[in-house]
Image (cartoon, rainbow, N blue to C red):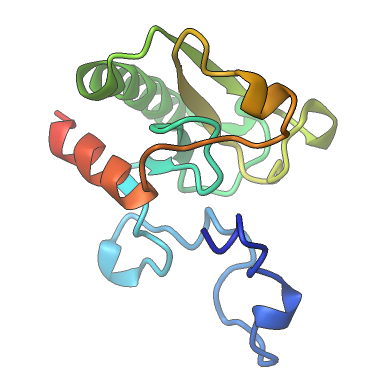
Length: 162
């Protein structure tokens, strides 16, 4: 809601230098004890993890990404590629169980010109879709309604993850 109300911004950041990595995805580590921004993490793997999108298109919109800071799909090693694929399949299965969407958008935006706002760290979007989820609010009003808080979505998905 802070984002929706416009309360986040440069003025809200402390004047001191932040010791955390500048990439928000790199702040999440394999070990929850050393992770600084992990409240939206759904599951951790050995080389990759799943996290809810902070600015979701729909409830359950999550991302699958490697811990390692790489920009291109071709930069993933075989273990990372395998785990990103396995976690993506598990994400689809879990969201289907929890939310019963009608369809999904699954994809990568490789590079800024492709729409990747954080293109320096590869991340694959998994977006559940329902018939009619883009309606007059989105098209005319430029507003997206989200009927579920991120924390609630995270708890439901984490509990259902196998």
